[in-house]
Amino acid sequence: MRIAFIQDSGMNESAALLILSGLLKLGGHSTRLFIDHDERDLFGALRRFDPCLILVAIDIGGHHWGLGMASRVAHEMRAPLVVVGTYPTLELETVLGRPEFRYVIPGECDVAVPALVDALTSKTPDFGAVPGLHWRDIGGEWRRNALPPYLQDLDTLPAPDVSLFEPYPYLLQFGVRRFVSGRGCANRCSYCYNNDLSRRTRSQGRYVRRKSAAPFVAEIAASLSKYPAHHVHMGDDLFTHDPAWLRAFAPLYRRTVGVPFTCNATPMSLTSETVSLLAEAGCHGVAVGVESGDQVLRERILERPARDEDLRAGCERVRKSGILLAAFNMIAMPGETVDQALATIRLNRELGVQVPRINFTFPLRGTRLTDRAIEEGFLTKEEQAEIEREVTAGRFKLRPCFRSPDNALLERLFRVFQFSIMTGLGEFQIRQLIRSDLATRAIPFRMLMLYMERSFFRVQWLPGLQMYLHAGHPLGRTKNFNNFIP
Ligand code: SF4
Image 1 (cartoon, rainbow, N blue to C red):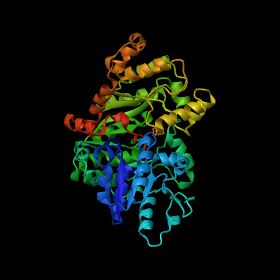
Image 2: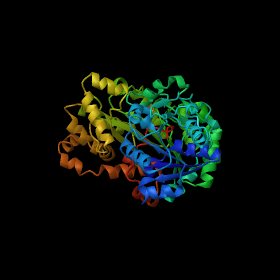
Image 3: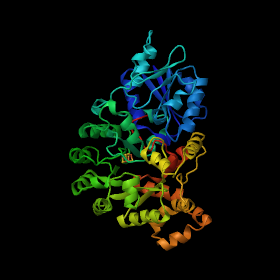
Image 4: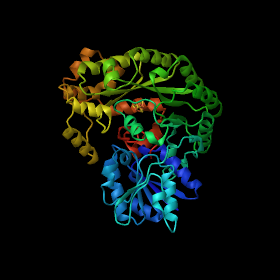
């Protein structure tokens, strides 16, 4: 059977989709990726491929494109459509409300999609036996199959099928490749989908899982021998939380792969041993969650356990080992003031952060942060619904989402956040700068962001430009926060 995957842009590469393609090929099927932005005539190309099943992954935040594309496929193509992704996982009822959809699979798809393909090829399809499938019966009513247990032994998965990128050479020429060793996150930050998803899927078994170090390293080595890259990014939410795993990984990776890599870490996990293992393995950069310079906001509002002293100790070890230090930061949290946001800039400087990242706090539905913000009056249900409508309609503009008298200033501080850290501007100068909307608009923060990310991921100029021309600014990436749902 021929299965077509449709993705919006080259920026939204999905590790889970590559695994799914590998699984389907093991079952004797053929797969082909279609990137909407890169196809002059997407539906013509789809018809020439003549798929037996079309899969559209809809991301939270990218659901404006995803819902529109899935709807067009349902109306214009004869092949059945299956809708997957973080949007149907977290907003299932909304997706089931669309009359044009017949097959929807929330959550991980390693079992469900191959089983759906088998059912579609059968003379007597039994859709009731496809784990996790939501499907319309002959009367048009939704039937909901129970979600399967989470796959526990990730070593049984095939290697990611990178050949899926072959129709789009710029993806293979980019020189930076992403690998993921595990699924799920052990933390439960109040603003993250992980706390909602892990709670809702408790009955499916252990949420945090990981491949063994040796097969993971072998997978990277085999993949790079076929599709070379000069940099690897470990896309795990947290890469350093298990020292025993790192002990097995570091010497093996150094010996058999040896390509510099970047990863994400919590400050507490950056012990002397962990950092020296990262250095031994050839780690080029670590991104740490700082989020807020105000410990009370960080601990009580964001529910991140990192104390200032943990951040200082972990980051100092990273810098001393010569590994590049990046930090995730948030601005415009419920109740945040300009003073508190300036504390975040101050802390990034103190920590010696070389690649500061900044995001507006977003009220994701179902998270404790959003629920509490509504209870405490920082957001009304109507405002949240309007934000969701804007995102769904593709007209959401980055901005503070929670009520605060400082919002206008916070919006300007967002634009000069990285500039202030990189140039060492004093707080008095920053306060002067953010008094003027015009002055902050003059700071090319998108370009600055690109420049810093380029150094973190060691992106070379020409392939980087090529990727940018095809896929746009990384700010448009909607696969940011999930590695295991296509
Ligand atoms: S924000 Fe990051 S560390 Fe926190 S739960 Fe989500 S993925 Fe894990």
